[in-house]
View 1 (cartoon, rainbow, N blue to C red):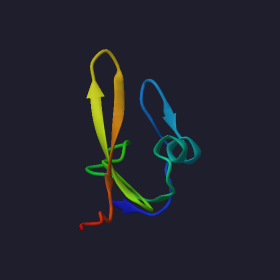
View 2 (view 1 turned 90 degrees about the horizontal axis):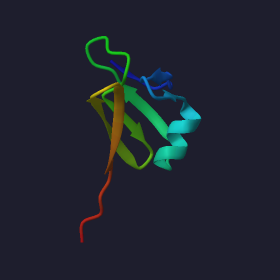
View 3 (view 1 turned 60 degrees about the vertical axis):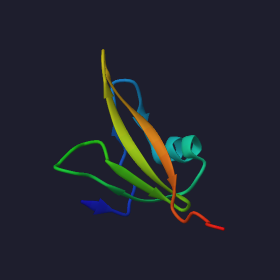
View 4 (view 1 turned 135 degrees about the vertical axis):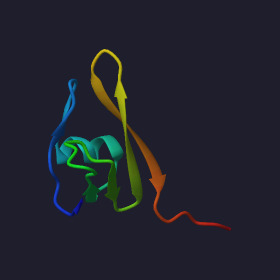
Length: 75
């Protein structure tokens, strides 16, 4: 499900708000995609990036973000 409004989500270590996410990524939020009724998004789009949300589960649930430029410039 693709949504264009921010929805807060949490792991065992952190609650991610719009303000925290934009500060961490350094860009402005545009949309997020949730798969299979998950509470944590799989992808988040910002003005300049597509952010892949990777789940890490060891001793507790956590996530990491991978930023990919949306419109790379090829020369």
